[in-house]
Image (cartoon, rainbow, N blue to C red; front, side, top):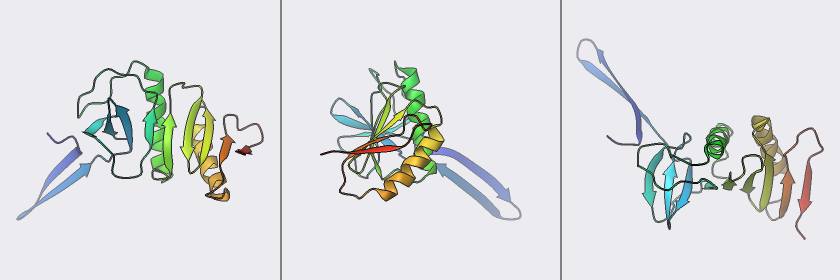
Length: 166
């Protein structure tokens, strides 16, 4: 059974046609593990393991686990952090910024951090996460690619502040 195949739908179309529809899982990020990278989908399912990664997708840090099985979702010790990464992965897929996010740190689910371009983005917890990701996309479009600093989106009721790194 190929772990990249999510679903197969086979239909008979009379009189002489068979229609086959295959839904494929896609790699949405990489989890470092013992010198290798686990390729995971947006639900935390391990699709592959390689010594390196080939495309620009987020590197996920902060998940705690001892082992994994290809084709299964990661069995992590810090379940809350796992829920965070599943939510974030789905949102960055939704807003089509997979290739822009460099790193996501979910070690502390109440203090989620992401790196985008040369900016560390403080997301706080999952409260209003969809709005935080949308805001991050909008603000990052206004920040010069060469600018370095910290963008605090942890509390959207407060003014959004970008602190330049000097």
